[in-house]
Length: 349
Image (cartoon, rainbow, N blue to C red; front, top):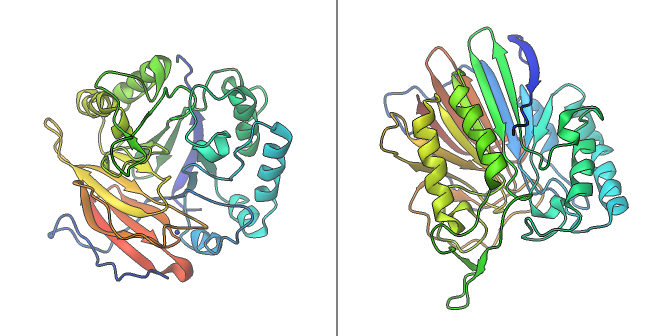
């Protein structure tokens, strides 16, 4: 843990995959020094199979994270059998290198479809209430927490250091998400819904996020989404399948007045940086995708992403964000086995 981490707290409001490519260092601002002093470090990752060895837990620990964030698909269960789901979570918790990490590091995060219980699943999943309880058990949320009775696993976490503050808003992109549209005209799996049709978050969660982000006074605000927000042309699950929801979130980020908003995502078995310039926002919105921890899209041969910065990493990796409050900047890293830096970017806010 960092020496300057004075307080770790949770605030809940219910009203609511070595690389086969050489990845260059990517720097958004040429005048920003690449070496970064970290006042607070987030480590995160997704897509973790318990039956496959995860070689990254020791590297994650060596990054000395102030918090570890699960980005979804934390286990692969794909089941409505709660006994099986619980057993798989127990397997993960008993992995020695993981247990060692979380014995000294706070753990938070979200789920995606495979730990939710239904591949590409959403609001229609018949075991979502039970699955929520299993997820909260895994995250060691107290039995008397209000999160045990709300619908959905969304929540907020707020961190104060000697240098500044960070708020983390964990979204649930499964519990309320309505139907997606299969693509029957191309070789893609999905295509966007008609504009205005369907939802990712559901109105209760939207109301919660609007209030939380608008009220935030944090120096940085991190939104954790299991699926990508910006990359929208690959034909897999993403916010782009609900284009009106993308516009709604971008508008909220601008109108909320929240400082230093960053999106973290997973799901895709690749890692990449995406960036968009929003009217009314004096810094670029970055969507940092980190996936996967135990298996990656090793056969990746390219896909369109108009928002991509740098190269795609398609080997096992995790992500870190090193926050420098004095310089108001963040150093983003994709890290592989042995601590190898596979991709890097600096952004000043």
